[in-house]
Length: 192
Image 1 (cartoon, rainbow, N blue to C red):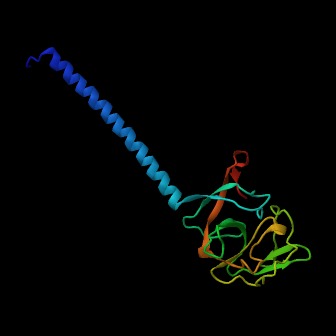
Image 2 (cartoon, one colour):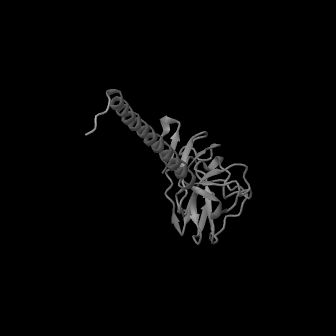
């Protein structure tokens, strides 16, 4: 073994320590950047947060609630709460509940407020008021392929598929399914 001066040995130890600290810093920065990229990708392709404007979904969802929705490989089903893009006549996305999907029969008794899908009376514990007003639109007997019929839970205060302004919703204009209320914090929870 070759003899090294003491200063040289101390210098080598300092280099090793500096190298370890530098490596740890780079690993930490790499982990943070990777985490940020993963979160951005998740919220771009899998999740999205949408602000609710209006009272048409009360008492399920309130005005100014923020909801988390999923949109990857989503196919609308009866009872789902969905966010619909502005591509279909709206200035901003709207949120409604799917009542009937393509191929299903739909009947609304505006005298009693009863809604029937495929001849079966819907159990709708989530509605604030019954469906007793027709907004002037035509309620189809059979939902055509590629479309869904939606209504707000606050039926007396909802512009939805009953209206000529909105009508049936093209499934391609559904952004995704609302899963959770994420704000305000006292209302955090799943959407049923």
